[in-house]
Image (cartoon, rainbow, N blue to C red; front, top):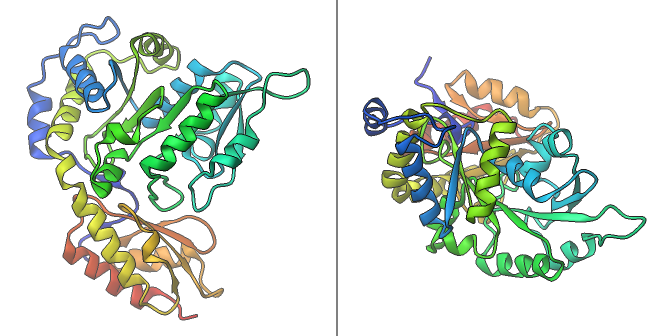
Length: 346
């Protein structure tokens, strides 16, 4: 078996030696009591990056998103978001199960919402409609292939939310990939949002965790909701230390991941049997489709795995590949060669 080149997700990243050292030496305390100094340092660093007063360390991005949903909604209200957004599709129906809220999906243009469509989806409080309680945005958009929502479009959508008195939550799991690609601070991409969640455990390569940021009132209640959802942690500074190193050392290299994803997309576009538009690859996620009806994405992924290349089969013909800091330029070329051998011509 060749050396494994794992393109399934950037969640497969391993902590760096510097992270492991920091984790081994971390000063810890009981975080539920608010006594873990390393967790507090991480939360403040994250809040400062997004220009928010406070932050909350949570075990996962999904929990961070659902804490925000729980804070801003009540049972019997709706959450407006893009049809393919992570909060609606990959969080186990948590907004309904944990908060009694319902999704109001709005179809975007390759993941990007149109302000006028959001406007139409907002329901006022009446005697016969389910009121809208929250607008949720996603930047970058996972299922749209890591698409970036521009600062200008973010401003337009925030304006729609404000017009209707809606709070706005940003699922910014990979917001720093977008920041690097655009050359603007992540805080600019989050401007106007009441809460923002970003992940430490994807391209930043920390072993565990995400951070939810917002104002002090929101984060104080979010801490209570985290405990309600089973996310209260004790000596969590051991993992928070890895997150601090991630923020200090890994953001400046995310451009390499974005560049390699673009190179992968351009090379795949030259292969008969692969359907992909490289112009739609903004960051580190590459989605492509198989043209042949004689080969499923699952079969294709299994064939690639025999060559040591791991990808994620999404449905009958769609495949996802994600670059991260373990993936080199040579790995990209190896992956492309393996695809040429594995794909069934159209």
